[in-house]
Length: 344
Image 1 (spheres, helix red, strand yellow):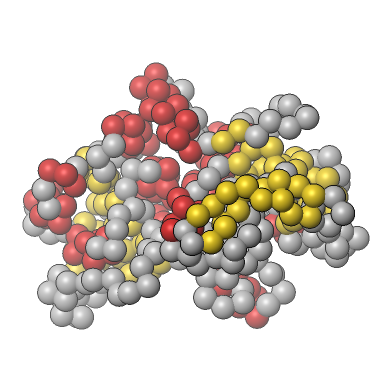
Image 2: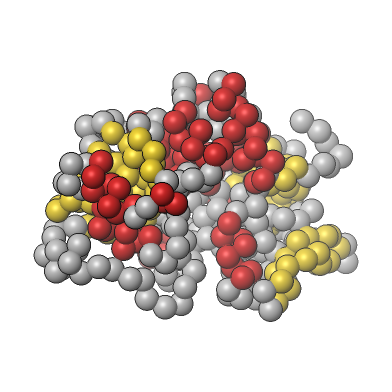
């Protein structure tokens, strides 16, 4: 039996290198050789909270070369380069057919990679239902841009969709990490009149401006709810995209939107306990405030992100000098190159 190296959850809050058999595809599945992968903060969180089976291979953002396919695969051939999104559901279940593929076998079960199935931080990775869950890279999109589009851009756009951003809206975006930055870009695309970004890291703040933030709020300089209250002339924002923060973030988001406002949450809360919510700011349950949270679309449902990669101001690898320097700092922290026999 041929073996491969992989980076996996070991147990007791630790991760490290393991050896496992190289997966073999059957039916509709395929096997790829990852060429470019990006670690996600959810990988770190899952290790920290011990919610994985020991030996589970981590990673769910990447692209790779197809090295084998099952007999049911029709659209792809061995040797093609494809991008794989974090959500690779079973499309043959009732929840998927009802439009809830992120919950194909129960609550948040659509993200199989690195959760219930081995992920992409390995020499080889099995991709379920390859025809439905992989995508070719369009011309003009860089490998880095493709990996960012599958999760970071996809999730940020989804946050703007969940928040129901409308033309002219005042939007608060919590977080200036990769997802928060793409949420800013998504709010801008949907016609937001004012975008208030909350964050403190220099690189993230610089990129927030690049992607469309009109105002910046530093949570280290005072209560963010009070700062937003003052910036919006004591009205509150029309909507808020929660893309970062601790367990208090959702309650803060609810407090920062006006009556009838909408919160779109794409933040991964890792607590097993409750999330605090200020009942007064929620209007004692009668503020007509809406909370919508969800995981980014999977399969090929995220492919509408592709045109954004070629739109001015949207590329995940900005060309302006200031933004480019800031992006380089982010990339050094978040992107891992894997050198294989074949080079780009």
